[in-house]
Structures are given as structure tokens and as C-alpha cells.
Amino acid sequence: MPAMAKPPNDETWTAADLFERLERRDKFFLLDVRNRDEFARSRIEGRSPLPAVNVPYFEMLEEGGQDDMLDSVVAYVERNLADHLPSDLPLLAVCAKGGTSEIVAQGLRRLGYASVNLAGGMEAWSRHYLTRALLAGRELAIYQVSRPARGCLSYLVASGSEYWRNHRSGRRHAQPRRSHQRRSVPRRPQRRSLPPAPV
Image (cartoon, rainbow, N blue to C red; front, side, top):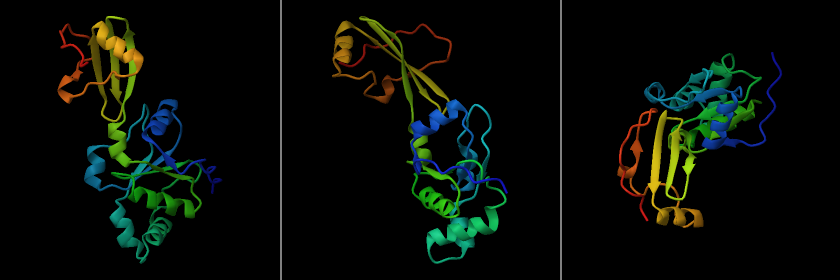
């Protein structure tokens, strides 16, 4: 049996931590404990395929057969997953909102796995976005907004010196107030006039 992976410094990854690890192409294993239909609809993907297994949490509880939830997870993993989980990689436990996967991560740590939980679960991952300034002039600012979980790429265009002055002073952020003000555009720019940014 290979040596167990070094336990992580923290027991939780944020969506930003996960994104950084995916960008660096860090090696880890994903244990998704959502229902099978949720896993089939959306899953965490990187630039290269991630090794993953999907075992719904309720199956762990039912088949684990213990009164305590954590004990049921441990019993299930020992009986059914020990041959499928790598002991030499960190294990990321994921659920819809981060609660049940925390219990699974605790059970895996009890068994000696280097296991972490995704804080906020898939809900937090789907809401994670990155903003990058493409152009930041006095009269025009263009920001690229990327949502890696959804594969979305959007742009925010702000014009006018008043808006820029407010943004530079820190009183206004380069984010739209209402969703209808966001414009998702294809990767190839189109000529389109946008309303001025909110003041």
C-alpha cells in the first residue's frame, strides 16, 4: 500500500483555493457525495480530467449501518470505498452546500486520509468568479468576469469620468448593480453600445 498523503495544513478549501489548485494542475481526488443526478448535471472539472467518484451521502448513512452519522461514514468507506480511494493524494469531499461533505471529510481523516472539505460546496463553486481589468483608462474601463464553474466569460464596460473617479476612490466597485446590466458576449468582441455605468 502506498504511503498516505501528507495531511493538508487546513481542513477546508474555499472556491478560490480550489480554483488555484486547478490552475496549478495540483493532483487531488474528488469524492462527490451529492445525488447521482446532481453529479451528472454539474461537476468540478479542470484543464485535465479529475479523478473522481460519486457516492451519495444518504447511501453512506444507510449502508454504513451505525447510529452516529460519522461512524456510518467511516464504516461505509472501510467496507466499500477503501479500494477506490487513493491514499497518496489529498481527497476533496464535495456536496451541494458544504455541510454533509464536512462530515465525510472528518470520517476520511479519522481513517488516515488527507481529506478536505469544499466550503460552501458546489453552490460556492458555481458562484465563484474572477475579475480582471483589460482596460482602465480615465474615460473607459473594461473588465473581464470569468466564472470557471460555469464556463462563462462576461465583460463589464464603464464609461465616463465620473464613474472612473468614483471607482478610483474606492467608493464604487466595477460590478453592475443589476443582473440585466451584465452583458455576456462571445469571446470575439462585437460592436455594441452599452448604457453608462451606474453612478
